Image (tube, rainbow, N blue to C red):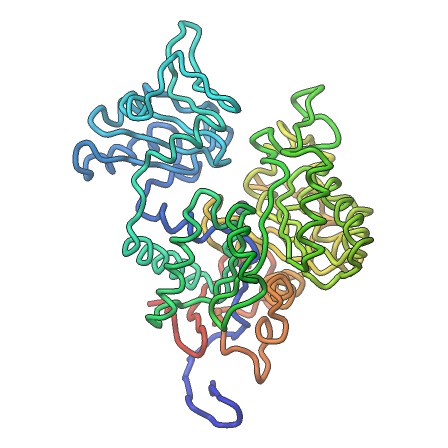
Length: 494
Ligand SMILES: [Zn+2]
């Protein structure tokens, strides 16, 4: 491979065996949140049952000085054999000399041991508006913390120093490089992170020539308002772009907080709720759309998607631009007619299609029922109407991966082997486009990334297999051999 600047050849790199693709482009994850979890305990169902998860936490406690925090994340009650939440007794057994806090995979709830409850000053009488310190039938705290009660306790956790933050981000970016990514959208600075510290840390890494991916930053409204007076959106350099706004309109389907148009499968009479009234969503979308700011909106349920699509339709009447690359992030339940309307508005969906594999069986049984499950993350419908779409896994919700996400989009097989929605399958070529050319649209980068083309960034991933030549069941087994960003090898498999 030759690297050129203009017409001048400046470098020749021998890549060895493999198949070269454009560097993968992430369209939605939380690199900064993830960076601060790397030294914490991963508690997802892939770790096994409750005893094995507690054992992992205990090993961490045994290697942590007394009194310091032991933190776990991604615990998923409906995904483990016991199918229950953790409680303070489980976590007291991990340690009584360390405060222990474990977050639920939805990021909307968590579990604390007695020492952690003491640190938060939570007891059985604590009342927190918009949340709950859950008590049992005897009136005792259980250690289970919901919504604002859980969010509040996050502020008690030790914050990273600027130096630690920078090094954490460096390590997190490497995890993306390992999986072939050369562009990362950090979706929502200010959501669970210090937006200023994270921005400064990315900039510092860039100045030290140690930023090994191109960062595309989106900010939650409170943080974005601070950038507004300086015109800092859709602006940056080759490695850091201030993208636009990240906005939430509902929660998560598997947390029963997604806003649906019909009842949840196992909860008749309950549809979940929008986080804001329609008028507020309309005002928000209109305000930023009319300032020509890209808006990436989190919607999971179809009612949330409807609220946002209709808000964009209204905003477009005031400012008829369809080139701002607005995004619906997740958009898991959008109907064909909603997809058509998104196309007319220039809205690009990025689907969290790995839901089909990881939560598909539970969506069919518990949350949505088989019919709605079979068209979850409707990549096939989007492809059919010619609406460009991207894919993501929302790290840290799921570990960083592009290949496994493409695998699910092509096969639509759940972890138990059930195929949900054969007609929503897409080809591997379309799945690759979702991580390259289409993903480039989401960061207004279609003129400089996402293709193997002269004049484009020298961002590549070398795989050990030609994805279009192997059986679809093998896609997830393909290996990243090398990742190259800006002509530099940033990951190389041993
Ligand atoms: Zn997210």
